[in-house]
Image 1 (cartoon, rainbow, N blue to C red):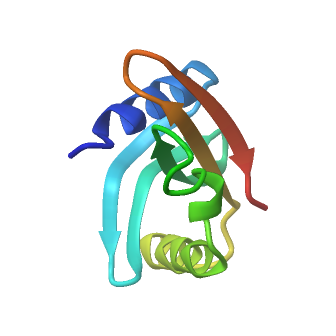
Image 2 (image 1 turned 180 degrees about the vertical axis):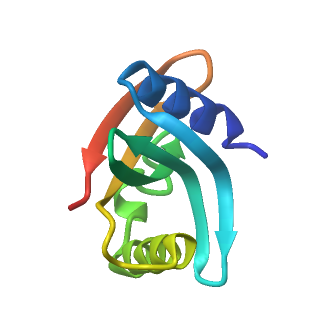
Length: 108
């Protein structure tokens, strides 16, 4: 998988901030959650987007309202309920495995 390095870097970054990894590439009928984590009592669904350059747009441009909605539906599916604290986040990765920059966004 060509973006696996970006997911690995994003996961390491978030774990260094205290997040706990619950799963990776969690598939649901609505789509996939790249990183399924916990930050204290809060469940966190993390979308990782990586681009080498701007030829195909920025990673942020890939986070469409449809993608956001699918992530949220996937979270509800995984939890099986809607009364738990949940946050949606994105880690945008610019560059290559040799030289990159991360941007961490909360989507709520």
